[in-house]
Image 1 (spheres, rainbow, N blue to C red):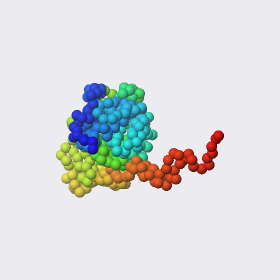
Image 2: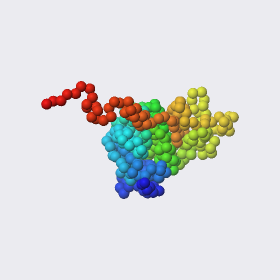
Image 3: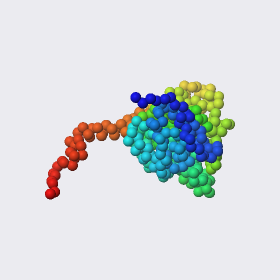
Image 4: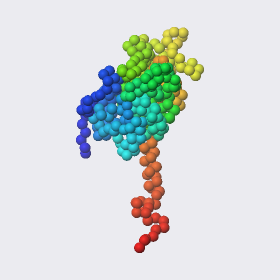
Length: 335
């Protein structure tokens, strides 16, 4: 029996120099993930980090696990191959809003649709950071960048909406200013059987600084961020007196204690509800910004379905070896 040892966050930190810009939100994400890995309960040789191209995609170099730095947008294909080859591995895909949603969009949505046992961390800073400040698929309409000096005229993707539309079984959102919460979400993602996607709101201090400041700044974060917990009412605010209430087919922000509003009027979060209607409403909500596990439903992962199918075919097949196949049907000898 192979002996295992209790690991710490330091055990998952490689000896490579971290090369992100000072003040980048990626540092907080790295530390949160390194802290989460021992809590996941895997040994380093049982963990694989796969990435594409972008600032976020340097991640595998900084984790003392197996890793693969792939090509632009193709990380889902590489990660899927690793998972199918060895379903017992804990496979993590690191990607950004450009890598996943632009050149890698097709791979991304189909990885989610298949529901393979992958954990995808989507760093969203709403800009192309590595290539120096062009607009990305999540950049706000009208935002001026190096590639849109008059303002972006493309409608941006809402990553959560895209993931739910691809029949995602797990979607969560975290923010780089709260690494402790992020660590908890990473652990929850690993527990999920199937594809787990975490959108991480991440600041690019050089090319899109303060992109989420209306939610994350000291003066706003207490009243603009709502941390969801399954089974609990959606209450937020510095005084803990604001909440979300259904008004017809819309969600509205209300204040408990005003106009007859009580805590009983506040929506109770159900992350496990199969019908995604409420989850769609939450990911599209512009205020407050909703964080935490938004959706987590049970569905048999792709690799389990594949294993069952292969076993069924093997049991029914008359061919038990390559010789059986080659010598089947009409055969002849050439003399």
